[in-house]
Every structure is written in structure tokens, then in C-alpha cells.
Length: 419
Ligand code: GAL
Image 1 (tube, rainbow, N blue to C red):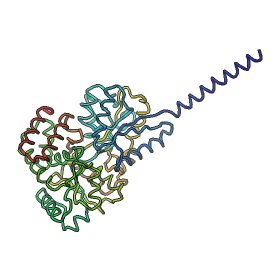
Image 2 (image 1 turned 90 degrees about the horizontal axis):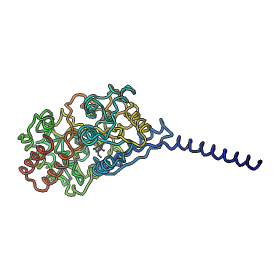
Image 3 (image 1 turned 45 degrees about the vertical axis):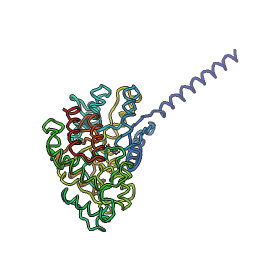
Image 4 (image 1 turned 45 degrees about the horizontal axis):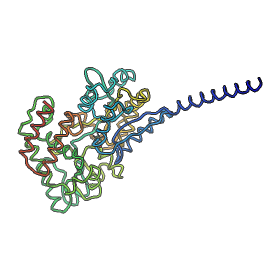
């Protein structure tokens, strides 16, 4: 009897222990898997700061930082799509507002609407509404914009320009003169790393704005501009001229490599989205001191926007923790922690401007005044099929220099995927 009693007691003790330990494991083991392509070169630093802030607010939730390297999601997007379609979604993932989010994931029924959450947190009216609209579909919002990047921006090494008596250009003609002058001096005029194709497409989209103007460019996506507009051909001609001045090994390099070439003083100019600004800062440069910036010539007055957003996939394994992540990135604190490092400006309008460097402050001013246009290369303007086709068209064009063939391909792709 005594034996039985002590047996019973120890069994009860074991059960109690098991219960307590599994309960505390539950409290500590909560996790949230965040998927992105921010793996290095200034991008990782921004993401890490955001994760740190998340962990300060939610110390018991472990962030699984799931990244797939490759600028602009050149590898990550395919991995993500396979996971989403295969019913194995992460808890939240980086996705561009616009076509990339809406066509690929919302229309296909793979995302939860989050309008109610934005209302509950009182943040819906705090965002720039044009940016927030890029995440909407049939009256509901599907993701939280964490930032706004600019694509039609050009950086330059101030010392290289000064040493070669080159002034920052004022238009495309003076830009080509500046490139020729640097070329004669034996410096790489324009550094490019387009092994993943999109960095070249991104130069082309800026030139489309230069020749079509913001309304003409936006018209390509809303049906008001025909794809055979002569200004499209003109953009191809400029592109071809400019490509004569890039580093020979461009097709073997990444965007970070190209930024580095300029950072090392081997190149004068670099056309790249302003995540390159974040990268240059992590390389030790101070905006305005070692490097200057300007919109891609003749595209001033237009701000080609790229917005990185995060949403809530249907079937996310940890939806409550995913909501905590979304709440963090939607907060002023979240935006002001991430963006000054990332080289982007906040999507919220009530951010603390004192936290932003001179480049980002000037970007905020332009953003407030300029016409906003969606980026092709970064998934906002057109469906994925068009982007892939344009990347191929531009890639081939760099090799052949055949303007008419590229112009024809542009029209064909536009007809097939956009109209
Ligand atoms: C863009 C993205 C940026 C940056 C860049 C280079 O598509 O919006 O945040 O990551 O790619 O990787």
C-alpha cells in the first residue's frame, strides 16, 4: 500500500513536471519565420536591426531569419513561390507592393487580408496612401509597407569626378560627355553588375521615364501609352549609348560588386536603387562627403518607387507571431529603426525625420513633391512574365546593340503580358 502510494505520488510528480516543462517550452519556443533576400551588403544590417527591435518587444518569440541570397530576389522569389504553392508558407515574407504581391499571391487566394489589423493598430491612415494602395485588392489590404526605395537614382564618387574635372551632369547629353571624359582618363565611367539581369533593366526603366515623362511612363501600365511610342525607342538608343561606358566584366558581377568598384575609386558613376546608399554607409562612407547623388538625368520630378512589404500568408504556421512582426514593422519605431540603415525612406508619413541622413532627407523631399511611378524591374508595374521577358530583351540588346529588334521585342512582350 505504502509502495503504491509513493508510486502514485512520483507518477503525479512526473506528470506535473512534464506539464510545467512543456508549458514553459511553449512560452519560449514560439517562433516566427521571416523570409527575405536581405543577406548582405547593407541589407542584412537593416533586417537585423528590425529583428533586434522585435526581440526587445517579444523576447519569447524566436525569429527564424530565412534568407535566400540574390539581389532583388533573383533566387528568393522562385523558392518562395514553390513554398507558397506547395502549402509550406513562411509566417511572413518580403514582397513588393503592386503586381508582384497582387497577381502572384493575392489573386491566387494565398494571402489573408489584414485591413482589420491596420485599423485595430490605428495605422491605416498613417501611411502614404499611394504606397499603401499598392498592397490593396478589391477593397482589402494584404501587406504592410516597411519602406520606400527609389530606382531612378545615380550615385557618384566625388573624388573621381573632381580629379577628372567632371561636373555632375544636368541632362543626358552632358551625362554622355561626362562618361566619355572618364573613359578617356582610363576610369570605369559607369559601374554595372548585371549578372542577375535586373540591374540593367533598372537603368532602362529610368531612361523610359527620361524620354516618356512620368505620365507617359505610367501610361504604359494603365493603357494610355502605346508600346510603340517613339519615346520607347529613344530610351533604347540612350541605353545603348550609355552601355558603351560600363565595365567589361559587368555580366559577371552583382549590384554590390558594382557599388564596390565605385567605392574603391575605380568608377565615377553607379546607377542603382538607393539600397546602394545603405551599402555605401556600411562600407564606411558618409553621404555627401565621399559620394553624391542625383536622379538619372532627365528623370527628375519622377520618383520610381519600390516598396518592400510583408503580409500574412494563409496557413502560416504561427499567425499570431506573424501579426506581431507586422505590428512591429508598421510602427514608427520599426520604420525608423530599419530605414535609416537600409537606405530607404519610411512608408509612414509621421516618421522622425531627424533620424535620416542628408541623402534620405533629400529623398523624402523628392518623394513628397514628385510624380510617383512604379518600378518594372522590382515587380510593381507589370506582371512577372513581362519582367522576365524584358530582362531577356535587355540582356540580349546589350550584346547585339540592335535597337529595332529590342523595340519590337518590347512591343511584343507588352502585348502579351500587359495589355
Ligand atoms: C529590391 C528590394 C530592395 C533591395 C534590392 C536589392 O528588389 O526592394 O529592398 O533588397 O532589391 O536586393
